[in-house]
Image 1 (cartoon, rainbow over the protein chains, first blue to last red):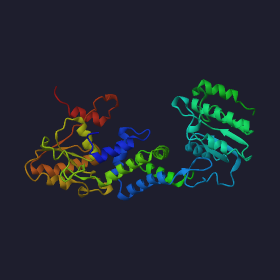
Image 2: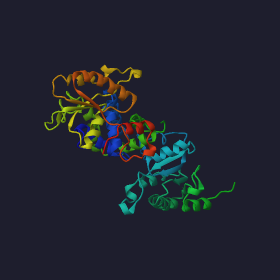
Image 3: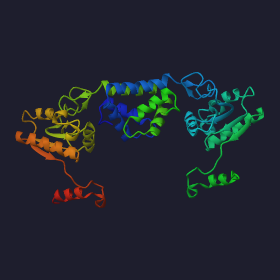
Image 4: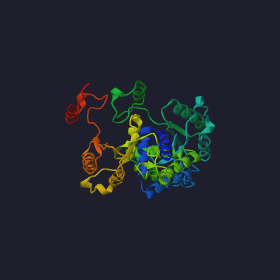
Length: 199
Length: 199
């Protein structure tokens, strides 16, 4: 690091803090910024400022939004009887890209993880339950990740929601489309057989 | 891109402009910035501003510097009789990391590339020649890249400098240390034999 003058080493440090960016990549990115025109650098700064000042959580689904109610929750065409519960905003994007799901979402912003001291009150579960107070919602699809934390969170929500008379489902486990059976792990294969459907 | 709200898609676009950053990585980086604390984002912005306002070219060697004369050129211990000529500031870092070279540098900021319309006046050759006006400099080491453009530039500078009575050398071609002969290309191997030294 001592090879770089302070303004450069500071920028390298900043890039290196980002996930998946090592020191070598960080220095390549820093030199790219150094080589940028004044106006491109201004645009870059404005974009960073933009996400820090122009983004809030949607009052309904807690997804990242630039309006108080996000465009999905305020879309009259969406099916308001179904809520797909996900861990993170990027999971919403993943489902939207399928162009198949037409219901609403709820973003938890994390998972319960007792070992890290993250309990149900630290993620947006209360906000989910509040959405079930009238009879609009008929089904909750739990789409947390198939990890220990994701399963724990799904089970916890399931136990809370079922007594309210709302149907609770979990996304299917199975082999990924395009994947090869040979490389699938045992647990996935077992779940794929368990979840088999008649053709 | 339409899946993201404008502040997010703008930041993704900005990251995706950086070299080696695809759309997927850009979106991962953007979400990392979104997840940053206010003060971390401020630091990031300050670091970008820092390289755009706090950096100039060293008056002597043309390397990036935060002072009018860079720390290498103003270092009394360095050998002022040798100048190592490189294409880019990062090449200086590469040589400094060897901790072997104790002379000075000259950064061309590019190479001559007739096919792209980049001639000798578009890079810092004039500034190099100006440094040879007194008798301090005894040797110029040409350390441009072993590419067509790098070679062309080295040849051009060599022809300009030799008549001034200054020794001109080119860094050695050969097999990289730790490399395997099997994978070296023919030209490199031929040069490695040509440049053999008695042990």
